[in-house]
Image (cartoon, rainbow, N blue to C red):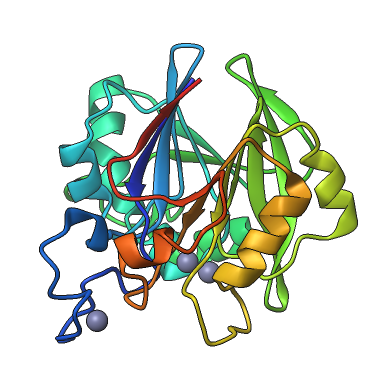
Length: 254
Ligand SMILES: [Zn+2]
Ligand SMILES: [Zn+2]
Ligand SMILES: [Zn+2]
């Protein structure tokens, strides 16, 4: 299994438009973050978690030979709005692409991208062909076992995903006890860490993410969804052993 971090930034991306702070003007590529997403290759299949507004650029940087399916964590724009850019895979593969989301996210996708399901609208340059499935329980697709992990994101319950001994949990400020059980035995974890401070109502800040990561006890934890408050080298130097900051282009193989 191979996980490629296509983007590790918060909703604005880093640099933030119009910001002149030292992180936004940094030459260090690890301070430059597209929106949060990963591409995963497992058992010869290629899939993405979320379709960010940067999806096209992300897949030009890190090409995949085909797109077998999509997993959606939730419907916030920074995780969804690149969905139209799956069309080249539809054209090339001549098939619709299966996508999996919880019922709340699926409903929001049907609303935000209503033209996909509007049979009356003209085809023009083509629409994404998507077969959207609602999931809440573990399922197997293309021979890959996928365990949805419900987590808190403010008032919303959104999904993290476990695939084998890897778990991906973006956009969270709390993991309920039943979901902590689903994370037992995880070896590699990607977890929302947003920024060092101040506290946030829908995201873990770094201290909270570290505490949660230590409870989960993965061999390696990579903090994701990072804001422009995070200077890569400085913040990474403050983290305990086994916990690091993810960065765009990071590849983990297991
Ligand atoms: Zn987000
Ligand atoms: Zn900035
Ligand atoms: Zn969000």
